[in-house]
Length: 379
Ligand SMILES: C[S@@+](CC[C@H](N)C(=O)[O-])C[C@H]1O[C@@H](n2cnc3c(N)ncnc32)[C@H](O)[C@@H]1O
Ligand code: SF4
Ligand code: SF4
Image 1 (tube, rainbow, N blue to C red):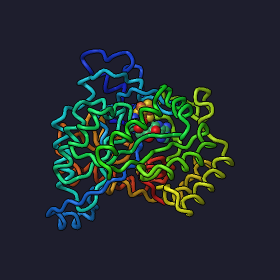
Image 2: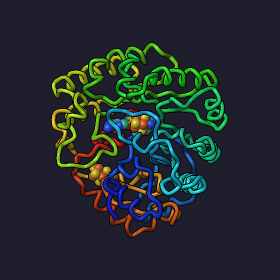
Image 3: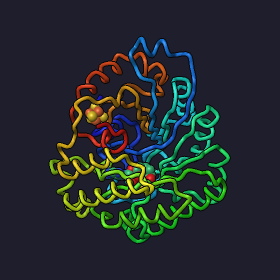
Image 4: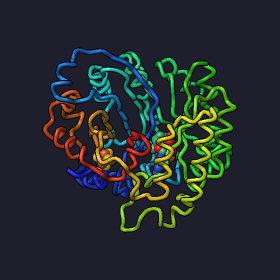
C-alpha cells in the first residue's frame, strides 16, 4: 500500500460504484497539518508495558473524519471533494468513538486531540464525537474555518463539552482573508463564531491559526495587533505555507506553478517578517509559537528543500493521524500502519510489526518535511 499521497485514486479504483466526478478527479490526498493546543491527563495501568517496549504513550492525535469542505482556499484542494457524504470514504461514527476509547485508555498524560478535515463541522456527528471525547476526560479541539458555527451549533458544541477551537484566520483585514479563502464572508463568519462561543462560555479558548504566505506577509503585524486587542482570543499560532494539500502531483515544484502565484513569499521579506514576529512575542504579544520554531520558519523560507537540522524524527514514537477511511498514519509520507475498521487502535499502537518497522525507518529520516516544521515541531 502506498503513502497517503497518491493513494486516493487506487482506493476509488477498487470501488464498485464510480465516485462523484469531483472526488474521482482528486488523484492524491494529503492530510492537513494542524496545530492543536489541547491537553488531557488520563491515567491507566500500562506503564510497565510502555517501558518494556521503550515506547512513548500516544500524546498527539489528529483525527480527520472527512475531506469535504465548504471553502475554497488558495493553498488547499480539499474543497474539491465537494459537500456530498460518501460512505466509501468516511468511516462511520462508531469506529471513531472506539478510537477515542482507545486513545483515552492509552494516554499517560496530556493528549493533543484535534478533529480536522476538510471542514469537520460538515460531519453531523461532530458534536457526538466531541461529547464522547469529553466524557472520557479528554479536551478535544476542532480545527475549523468557523463558517458553520451559528447559534445552534455553538449551543451543541458547548453542551458537548467543547472548550477550545483552532480557528483559521489569515488576516485582520476581512477582504484579504476572504480572498485567500475564496469565500466572501469567511472573515465575518469566523468572527461570529468567536462571539457565539465566548458568549456562551467566557473561558472558551480561541486560537487563531494563520498560514504565513506571500499573500498576507505584510498584514501580519496588523493581525498580531488585532489579537492583542481582543481579550476573547488566547493567541495566534503561525504556520508556514506548505505544498497545497491534495495537490495534483506533477514534475513542477508547487512554488513555481502559476496557479499558486503570490503564495510563496520573497525569502528576504519572510525572514524580516519573522524577525518582527519574534520581537513581538518577546515583547509580550499573544504569539503562540516558540522563537525556535519561528527561526526554523526563517530557515524554511530561505531554503524550503533543505531547512531541517535534526536527523532523527521522533514523530512516530508519540503521534498518530487517522484519515476519513480510518487509515492510521505515523508519517504522512509513508504507508498507513493499519486501519481502525480492521483493528483496534490500541493493538496497532503496540503490536503491529508494521508499526515497529515504520518507527525504525522514521527515526532515521532526514526529509525536510512540513509536519516537523509546522505541526509537530522538532528542532
Ligand atoms: C486543512 S485545514 C482543516 C480545518 C478547516 N477546514 C480550516 O481551514 O480551518 C487545517 C489548517 O491547515 C491550514 N492549511 C491549509 N492548507 C495549507 C497549506 N498548504 N500549508 C499550510 N497550512 C495549510 C488551514 O489554513 C487550516 O488552518
Ligand atoms: S484549508 Fe480548510 S477551509 Fe480551506 S479548503 Fe482546506 S479544508 Fe477547506
Ligand atoms: S521527518 Fe520524515 S519520518 Fe518524520 S514525519 Fe517527516 S517525512 Fe515522516
